[in-house]
Amino acid sequence: MKKTFVASAAVLALALAPFLPGITVAPSNALAQDSSGATSATQRGLPDFVSLVEKAGPAVVNISVDQVIQARNDENNPFAGDPFFDFLRRFGVPSPEFSIPGHPGNDAPRVRQGIGSGFIVSSDGFVLTNAHVVGDNKAEVTVKLSDKREFKAKVIGIDRRTDVAVVKIDAKNLPVVAIGNPDAARVGEWVAAIGSPFGFEHSVTAGIISAKARRLPDENFVPFIQTDVAINPGNSGGPLFDLNGRVIGINSQIYSRSGGFMGISFAIPIDVAMKVKDQLVQFGRVQRGRLGVYIQSVTPELAPTFGLDTPRGALIAQVEPRSAADNAGLQTGDIVLKVDGIEVKESGELPRIIGEKRPGNKIKLEIWRKNKKQEVTAVLDELPSEDTAQNSRSVPNKNTRDKLGLTLRPLDAREASSLSVQGGLVIESATGQAARAGLSSGDVILGLNNEPVSSPAQFYKLIEKAGKRFNLLILRGNARIFVPFKLD
Image (cartoon, rainbow, N blue to C red; front, side, top):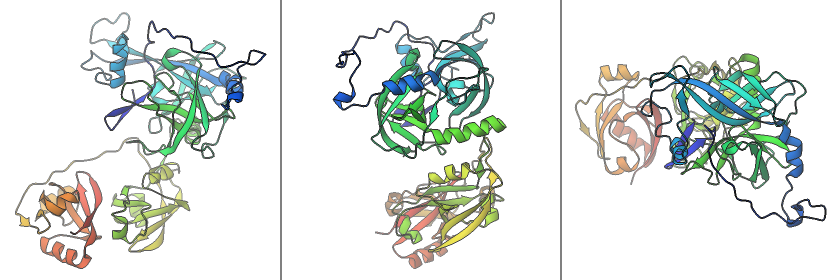
C-alpha cells in the first residue's frame, strides 16, 4: 500500500483489498430527459460524457492481484497503522492478508488480495496500471475485460519511482485507448475517470483539472495532474480522460484524512507513463540518467546572495565524487538553469529532466557560477535502483563563542576524515539571529558564499567581507544545504 503523508493527512494509493460487504447505494434524481429518453446534459451547459464512455470504456479493465507475502499478525502486518487499513477495518473488512490453505498458523505465508484498474494500450494485450496495484513481479495478476472475459496476465515490468506497471495478456484485436497530450490540457478543463472504486467495475466519475505539475513529498519523477474527480480505492491504475476521450493520465493517489475521496486526487501524466512503458517492454526495467548532485531550491532569500535577480534553477549543495557532475567540473554553489536548452524553473524539475535521459547521454548544462552564466557538458551515469547513505556524528571539542548567536568549534582531523570534508565548524548551539536563520546544534558550517571555512577567526573575516547578506553551506546529517543569512 503506497502512501505519502502531507500536513497530517495521507495521500493514499488506491488499490483495493477485499470488497466492502453490504453497501447499498440509494438512487439519485435523474437529469431531465428529451423526447427520446436520453439525458440532455448539453442543454444544462454541462459536458456530455456519454460518447466518451461508449468509445473508450471497452479499453478499461479490472485488475485483481494475489500476492504471497510473509506476515504473522497485525504487529508485523505492513498495513498495521495505515490509515487506509484502519478505514477498511471500520467498515468490517478483514485484514487484506489471510493464511494459504494447508498452511495454518500465524507463521504461515499469507496471500494479499487486491484489485485495481488499468487500460489497454495495444491491441495485442499490453495493459498499463499502477506499480502499487501489481505489487511485484511474482504476483498473480488477472485482467477482466468489459465483455467479462478474464485472462491471466504476465507482469512485464514495474517502476516504483513513477508508480507505473505494465502487464500483458494473451489476446488479439483488443480495443485500445487513444493517447492524449497532458501538456495541452488546461487547468479548469473537464476530465473523466473510469475504474473500479470499491470493486464496482467500470464506474465513471467526472470533474475538472485543479492544477498541473503538482509535486508530492518523495516524488521526484512525476509532475502530477491534480483533479477533483471522485477517485476511491480500486480506481488505482485507471485512465483519466479529456473530453475527446483521450487518456491524459493514470489515476494514482488521493489526498485524504479519512481514507476516502475528499476532492483532491492525483494522476500520473500519460507521457511520463508511456516513456516508462516503452522501457519496461524493451528492457524489463527503466534506465535513468544520473548527474550525481544533491540539490535544493533557490529561495527568494538565497537568490540575491548568489547574484540572481529572481529565484530560479536548482542549487547544487553537494557534488558526489567521481560522478558525472564531478567529471564535468560542476561545483557546490553552482545553479543549474537549463539542461539541453530546457529551462529548470525550480529545483524539483531537475531530477525528472535528467531521469528522462538515458545513461551515457551527453548533455549541455547552463549554470550560474560567480554571478555569470557558463556552459558545461556532462556524460550521464545510470541511476541505481536504490540509493545508499551513511550517517556520521561529530564529537564535541573546544568551543568558541560567536557574536551572532553561534557556539562554534573547528572539526578535528578525525571528524573531518569521517565526514569526507576539509575544514568546517561544528555548531554546538544556535540562538538569536543564527536560530532565526534556521541553524541548529549539530550542523557543520563548510563555507560562506562559497568560501571554505576552517576556523572561527576566518569565519568572522568572511562575514565582515560579505556585508549584511550572505549564505552558509551547511552539512546536516548526510545532506548539504545552503542557508540564507541576513544580519539584523
